[in-house]
Image (cartoon, rainbow, N blue to C red):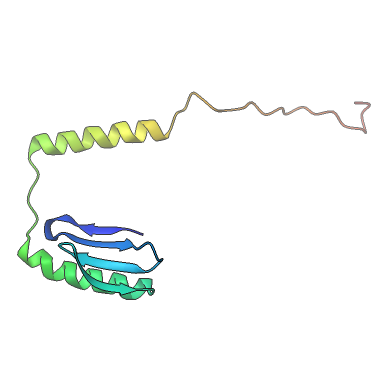
Length: 98
């Protein structure tokens, strides 16, 4: 599990030893095995930071680029032409001489 709040350099990530760590600006704030405790701490810090880092409105060009990327990504995930195998509907049965 990974969570992040880039404006405040806030990250929740799994450490090498299996524990979950919350870091702010590269400094470790919390290290625990409890996922719910780590998420609660992350959300509390993020809520505090959202007041200091208000959201910025995207420009038309940024919105268009994000939309284009989203459409291209969705097209790659679903390919309607390949990979389908035709299922045989008629199979031989023992009761009708097949």
